[in-house]
Image (tube, rainbow, N blue to C red; front, side, top):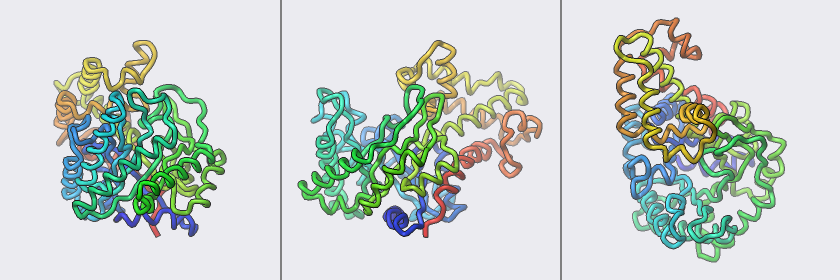
Amino acid sequence: MDRILTRLAAARREGRPFGITSVCSAHSLVLRAAIRRAVHDGGPVLIEATCNQVNHLGGYTGMRPEDFIRFAERIGAEEGLDRAQMIFGGDHLGPNPWRKKGPEAALEQAELMVEAYVRAGFGKIHLDASMGCAGDPAVLDDRTIAERAAGLAEISERTAKAIGAPPPLYILGTEVPAPGGADHALEELRPTAPEAARATIAIHREIFSRAGLEEAFSRVIAFVVQPGVEFGSENVIGYRPELASELTALLDEEPQFVFEAHSTDYQTRDALTRLVQDGFPILKVGPGLTFALREAAYALDMIASEMVAGYGDRPLAAAMEALMLAAPGDWQAHYHGDETALRLQRHYSYSDRIRYYWKRPEAGKAFERLLGALRGKTIPGTLLRQYLPQLSAAEVGDPETILIAAVDRVLADYQSACGTAP
C-alpha cells in the first residue's frame, strides 16, 4: 500500500493526479468511520499519530506507537479491513513535546520517539525539527532545522535496517502557523513563498547528502508548506488557487516531490479537489473530524434529554464543561475573550480542543451514559429533524451509527477530492 504514496508525484506529472486522506485522530469512532469507508471504497486508509498524541512515553492518549497500531488494527479487524490496506504515519516527529528542555535533551527524546515509531511499524515518517527548544533563537534557521531532521532520519534508517522493516518514506518541512489550528482570528494567510520552499528543499538535500543519507532522501515523497489554508477558533481561511500558483509551479522543478497540506479541516469539497489537482495530494484532517463527532454527540445529548426519562439536562455537555474547567491546560492558552466567549470556544471552537478530553475517564463515563440511554430506542423523526436535520434515512440507527455517519460525511468530501489512484 505504500506504493500509493510513491505514485503521487508521478501521477501529477502524468496529468492524472489523485490524493489520499490522512486521518489524524486517536478517537475510536473516528478511526472506525475511516476504516469503514476504506472497506466500502476498497482503497487504503492512512492513519497518522502526532508526536504529542502518541510517543514512547505515552503522549496525551497514554498510547505508545505500538499501542496505537494495535488499537487501529483491532478496529480494522472488527470492520473486516485487510491489514495490507492500512498505512500508518507519524506526524511532526521531533522535539516539540520536550521543547521546554534544552536542544540536546529534547532531541534525545525525539530520537527515542522516532525509533519507537519505526519499530512499531509506522512507514510514513514526517520529521519536523522546526521547533525551538530552551536556549534556541526564537526562530530556527533552515540549516539547523535540516541538521536536526537529518539526525532523526539517521535513527529512523538505522532502526528500520536493524529490525528488517521496509525503509520508511519521509515527509520533511513544516507549515506555519503551528499544527492544530491558529489560536486567534485569521483574516488572511499567504502561501509559502516559492523561494522559501526552494531553499528548504535545497538545504535538506545538501545536509542529508553530507550525512550520507542520500538513500533516505531519495525516499522523501513530500515537503510540508503552507498552501494558504488554515482555521482559527471561529473562522476558516479557504484555499485560493491563484495565490498558490507560483508555489505549486516549483513542483515542476522538483519532480520527486509533492506537497503535504496540513490543517485542511473545514475546507469545502471544491477546495479540497483543487488542492489535490494543484499538487497537495496528501490532505491531513483531524480536528474537523472530531468536531463533526462532537457536533453529533451534543445533538444526541439534547435528544436524550428530550426523550429519555431520568437522563437529565444535557449531562454530556455538563460533564465536559466541568472537566475542561477542572483541567484547563489543553485549552486555556488557545482561547481568548470574556467568560461567555471562553465557554463557547471550549465547546464549539473549530480548533476543537475538547478533543484532548474525550479519553479521560469522566468523559468516557458521560459518553457511555449517552450511548446507553439511546441504544434500542427509536428516535422520532421529528426529533431527529430538530437536532440532526442533515441525517439521511440510511444514517438513522443506533447512536454509534449516527456518530460514525457524522464523521463519514466529512470523509466523503475528502474521498471525492482524492479520487481513485490510477
